[in-house]
Amino acid sequence: MDNPLKTPPPYPIASVDHALRAAAILQLEGGATVSQIAERLGVARSTAHRILAMLVYRDFAVRDEDRVYRAGPVLELAAHSQSQISRLRATALPHLQRVVDLLDETANLIVRTGDTARFIASVECRQALRVGSREGMVFPAHRTTAGLLLLAELTDEELAEVYDPGRYRDRAAERPDVDRLRADLVKLRRNGFAVNRERSERGLVAVGVPVRDPQGTAVAGLSVSLPSVRYDPHRLQSLVATLNAGARALEKDLALQA
Image 1 (cartoon, rainbow, N blue to C red):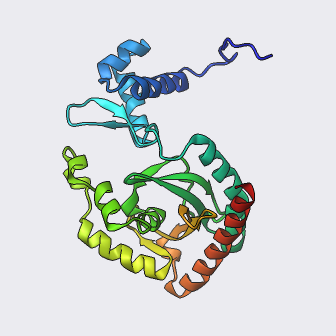
Image 2: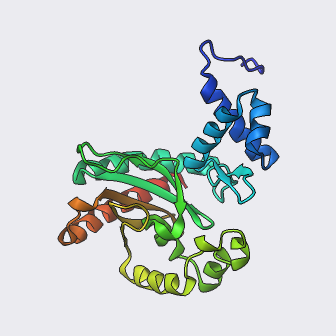
């Protein structure tokens, strides 16, 4: 039987340990200031600031207007259980690799939680100029290809709930124009795919299609990301066809596990 007591690794990395402890504090205990984190970790204030800045960059933390740090989207309780995410990711990886082999561009799998989209898997291509892995990162759903695809599945009432102004009291600038977004989603729903031209990141273009469960509900988005300088609109039909083939193959594997 496994020993129930945890023992530290023989070669601990203090900076990693500090970051993980800070993330756990934010997730389990609520907000904390730089000074409070420094005191809890037993480090200098400047060190605590650097740790928190990196957590913010990777979406493990957010800083509010009062300079209090709180758990970010990555640490928030997701609508999907971790076991579901793990299964989805493991099942998708071979299909992402197949897309990369065919297109030689970076492929991603993304899920939506509320108004955010989280990259749960990425496979990079081999080209020198390429889009790097976004695995684990979180973006506003309305600014990503897969996020838009998954938002397009919502009814008008559900979309209004996601973007209820009350949820944006302290961050009104982050709330999209819902009427304009709704119009974009109607077009996207009709097309069956989404194209993101520098909507989330400058110099990046992404094309994506939905991945559905056996009941027909979109559970994720399968996308390919490439530098905008390499994007050719004349290739769009081919990109979508390859992505749809990958999505259908992934859906078959998911159905076998249901």
